[in-house]
Image 1 (cartoon, rainbow, N blue to C red):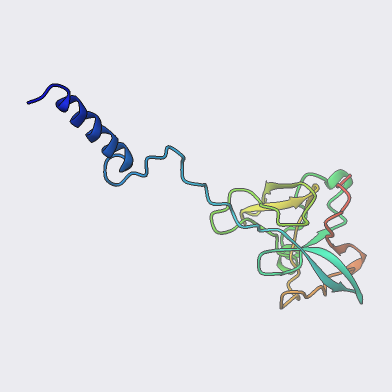
Image 2: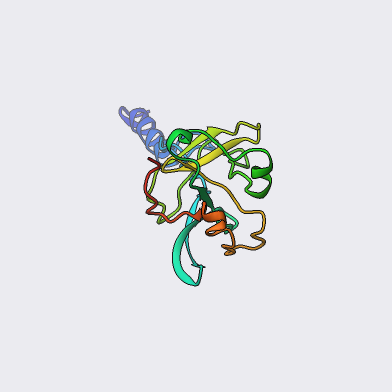
Length: 163
């Protein structure tokens, strides 16, 4: 055997292995797989409210979200619509294993949560306002709860923080 051929063969084999990306089943990259992005569960959507076009908050199904003006002042920071109230105005709670609310495009306020006092799950708040549905809204885009009793209102993305 001539001198230097063994060294050449070893170097060539190393380059071939490096070009193949390493052992089978690997890509040769140490980049981790991307983490899936959670789908938004609060979205901003244009709807007709009391005859006027406005952008409001809805859930993933397009159902309108409401705030109750009673949830302020001494009642701030807790969920006050319980019992019969919560039958007509069901709480907006996280579903599908979600652990936190995820804003969609146009949702510019702060999303937080509180434990629902009736054990209905983790209720979502927007700028400090607990969010609710209206039982009489039957389809996406319905806004029939607007102004009910002078205390229930749709929630626009620019809703002022609960004071």
